Image (cartoon, rainbow, N blue to C red; front, side, top):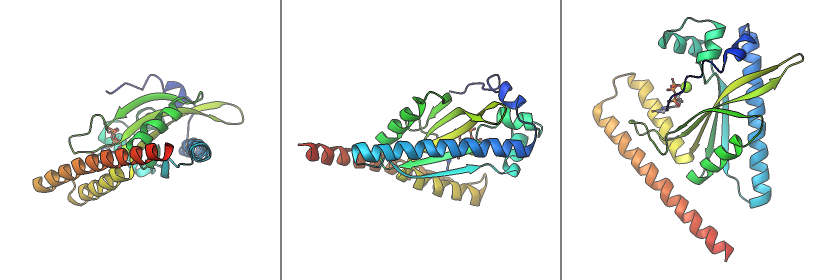
Length: 216
Ligand code: GTP
Ligand code: MG
């Protein structure tokens, strides 16, 4: 499911004029979402004695990759186009242990009043042809400046350790061969993706079982 987000973001792009401003705003948005996620994780640890999140990585996309992506999509390199069409200028990746954690985290994020979920892509329910699995959200959240509020988009990717392991290797292979990944490697990657999915399912049910045993 793809939505056209361009309308929603007009107000956003009107508020950013220079790369310095863009960088400041997206960095601020990342700091906020990182803190929100830390708080959720600590609260969860307090209440349930359990850490749903293994680790978190956040990055602002480099100007070079932003320009490359704009060009790839047929847009001129302007600040307005960046802000309007590139959804992953600010990106955060949340790695957790179990598939059930992914949906729990996604729900906790969506429920926050100041966060607006613009787009969800569930590549766990609907894996990509490559075998890629992950849960993606594009959200927008307010950044408070001295004289105005700017709504900034952040791409959130949530995946298990096993899905992350697979995605890193696949990414490395794609980089190495560029567009020409040999068929047998693609096939084996797809097989690995199925194994990852089976592993995640087994680990989750084992975890449920020991949790039930602990509750008795
Ligand atoms: P991009 O132009 O790559 O950002 O894709 P998109 O705008 O169609 O969005 P999508 O949700 O499909 O992908 C966003 C991000 O998810 C990518 O930038 C990658 O970080 C990651 N991703 C998506 N598909 C794959 C895949 O097949 N393999 C790997 N390793 N990562 C993927
Ligand atoms: Mg991307």
